[in-house]
Length: 138
Image (cartoon, rainbow, N blue to C red; front, side):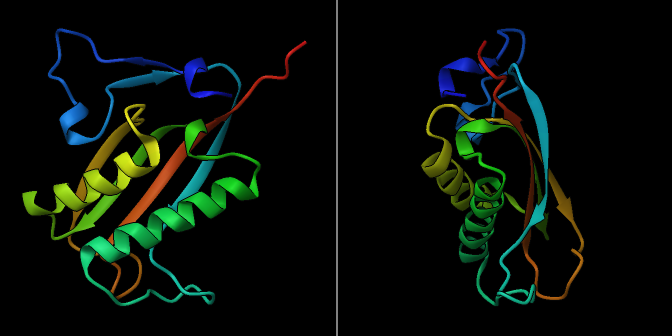
């Protein structure tokens, strides 16, 4: 599926979400693929210490690897769920930059949740995704 096969809808009745690095709605033909929460982890699954921005980058690298493992890429993602420990507005800039570096102006729908903690001590950020496997052409 190319980026052009997805339809991004940001209705005029809603605010423009692109400065906040997401789209309101994304639709696409094909089969849904659900990617579990990815975080800044080492080869054994232990959280990798680091600041918020570095954990975001590593978690997105892990998300890319999970997508690649099923033959997909960031261009196939239509929805993200992001979880930020002790969220505050200062965390939006590094998150937005990291997302825009991977998605450009074709941002998936996204829900950001501020949480008190995540599954393992030291995790500051986690991201899950729904992607669409292209329909076979025929």
